[in-house]
Length: 169
Image 1: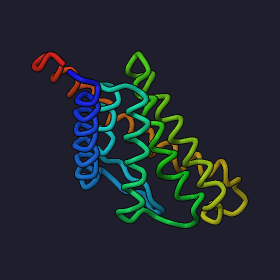
Image 2: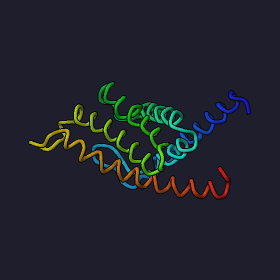
Image 3: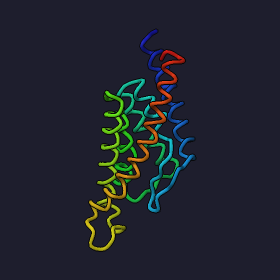
């Protein structure tokens, strides 16, 4: 297989995973009052990253963030939207670390850090009076993203094992 054909196949697979990711955003387990939800959008992105590697994972994450912006993400400032979407989603590339669970923890930590920075700087007014905005942002973002990564990680791991067994990928 030529390198150009290989790149075309990977890009097509990435586009399909990206499209499926956006379909899966419609299956919400719950939504937080000031934004953020637990859904299955990360499953195809995790599988793509694990299959194609961290460089392609970062690219698909950035594209996912850009698609969120195009499709109506919450926009407060340019820096906030870049932190909350392309930068935060780029950390999905870390899901390629081995073992699988270490990669998910690293991806969660990166996405959480980006979201916490954005939250503390741009959404500090939502912190209860007297509470440090950094603590509030962490307490708001970390659990929601944690649950999202746990649910998505379990689903991705199960699908990977099924595909590995049945399709010898």
